[in-house]
Amino acid sequence: MTLANGRPYLAIPGPSVMPEEVLRAMHRGAPNIYEGALPDMVAGLVPDLRAVARTSGHVAIYIANGHGAWEAALANTVAPGARVLVPATGRFGHGWAEIAQGLGIEAEVIDHGKRAPVDVSRLAETLAADRAHTIKAVLATHVDTSTSIRNDIAALRAAIDEAGHPALLMADCIASLACDRFEMDTWGVDVMVAASQKGLMVPPGLGFVFFSDKAAAARAALPRVSRYWDWAPRADPQMFYQYFGGTAPTHHLYGLRAALDMIGAEGMEAIWSRHATLARAVWAACERWGADGPLELNVADPALRSHAVTALRIGAPHGTRLRDWVAREAGVTLGIGLSMAEPGSAEWHGFFRFGHMGHVNAHMILGLLGSVEAGMRALDIPFGRGALDAAAEVVAGGCPAPSVQPAKTASTGRRGASAASLDG
Image 1: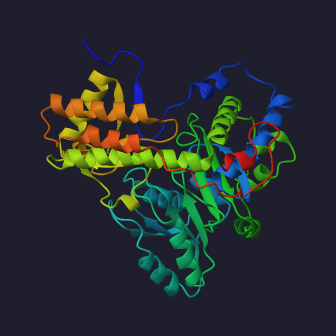
Image 2: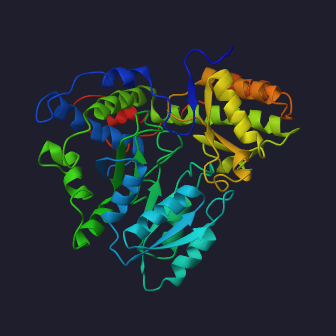
Image 3: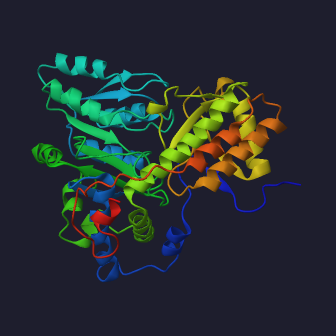
C-alpha cells in the first residue's frame, strides 16, 4: 500500500507547479501564426512582462531555456576576446561563465563558494584595478538555484558606479523573477535574463532578455550578432515572426498570457509578500528540525536566503533516502542537491532542496513540511520537535500588507492586465 496515490506535488525549484488556468489556456489546437488573435495577444505580453521586471526597457523573447537567455545576453553585448567578471555563488554563476567561454569571451570568476553571497569589496577591487576598462560586463546571479543564496544586486550597481567603471551589470533572475523582489530600473540593471518555468508558472521553453538603452548601444557597436540571438528585431519587430526568430511558440504564449493575467490580478507586491511568508514558514520548520538533528539550512543568514528555493544539508545518505521516501510514500518530489557535491560520490546523497516558487500557497507548503517530517520519522532520521507548529505560526501570522508602489511602466497590452495593475 502507498499513501502517494492522488495528485502528486512537484516541490522542486523548477519546473514549478503549473496552474490549471495555464494548462487550460494551452489545451487548444494550433492557431494561425500570421495574423489575427495570436499576434494581437503577443503585443500585449510585452508591457506586462516589463511590469513584472519593473522596467521601461526593452524585452526580447526566445524559444529557449535559461541557458539560451544567458547566451543571448552575451551575444548581443560582448565580443569574442573581450572580458567579463563573474562573481559566482553557486553552480549557475559558473554556468553563465562557461557560456561566455564557449563564445570566446574571457570569463574571470570570483568564486564565493556555496554558502556566501557576493563580497562587494572583492568586486570593487577588481573593477578598480581594471583601469583600461577591459571588463565589459559583470554577470551576477540574483538567486542561485543550487545554493539558494540571494545576492544584493543594487549593491553591485553601487560598486560599479563608485569605481567609475562602464561595465554593464547583468542579472540572472531565472529563479527569482516573480518570486523575490527585483527592481530592474531602480537597481540600475542593464541586462536581465529569465525563463518561463519558475515564477512565471509556464512550462520550460521560453527565455527572456530585458535590456536597457545602454545595453542596446553595446549591441549596436558590435560588428555582428548571430541572426537567431540578435535581440534587435525581437524587441522591435516589423513582422510577427521576428519576435521569435521564426515560428512562434504558440501554446507557451497562451500559457504565458494566462500566467501574466494571474500575476496582474494578485499584484507584484502581494506576490513578493506571499513568497516571503511561505519561505519563512519553511525556514522556521527547518530550524526546529535542525535543533536536534543533522538538518541544516545551507544559508545561515535569513537576509541572504531566496524566497523561491531553500537548499538543505542533512548528511549522506539521508538526503537521497528522504527524497526517495517522500516521493514513494507521500507523492511529493523534492529537489536534488544540485552541484553541492560531486555526482555519484557519497557526499552527493547528503543534500536536497525545496522549491517554493510561483503557484504555491499555505496548504501546499504545510503539506510539504508534514510529508518531510513523516519521512524523517519513518527513516529514523533524528530531528527536533515543533517544526510544524513553528511553520503554522508563521502562516497564521499572514502576509504583511503590500506596500503598493507606482508602476514603472504605464503602457497597456491589447489583451490582459496593464502594467499598472501588474504593479500591485
